[in-house]
Every structure is written in structure tokens, then in C-alpha cells.
Length: 106
Image (tube, rainbow, N blue to C red; front, side, top):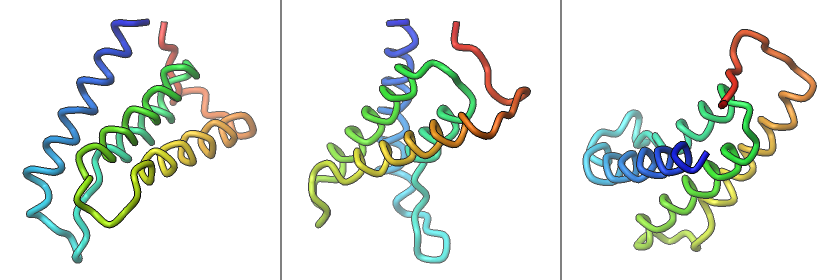
């Protein structure tokens, strides 16, 4: 479990670095892609371990907040967005089941 959390943390860290250093120059219709929030969504859809999903949302939001200090948004903005994504996906997977999508994190 700890190994999986460390892998997710390193993965999110490198996604934030890649996003804020390289992808900031590539805008699609004036919007730069947010790979960390996309990763949070995909991890929440494909895995079942609730602690891993909550950790991914918190650390993804924290990394985005830490690397976007110069922006006009307050610290915690991306944490709130990632937690809302986590709660929406967790709530929706209770009522809508996709048996072939979700994988066990054991």
C-alpha cells in the first residue's frame, strides 16, 4: 500500500512539473491542458481503493497548488476541485456500476 502511494505521489509530481514547464506553452483554444486533474479523474474511475483515491485527490490538488503560487487563486483551490471530483466519482460509482472498468488495487 505504501509503495503504491509513493508511486502515485511521484507520478503526480512529474505530471505537475511537465504541465507547468512544458505544456504551459501549448494552448488549445486558449486553454492549457490540466494533466493532474485528468489523472485524478482516471485513477478515481479505474481503481477501487478509497484511501488511494482520496490520497490521489489530495496530493494532486496540493501539488497543483504548490506549483501555482503566482496565480491569483488562493491556496487550496485545486485541492477543493480535486476533492469535489473524488466525491462525485465515488458517489456516482455507488449507483452506476461498470464491472469491466474498475480494477482491484490489491
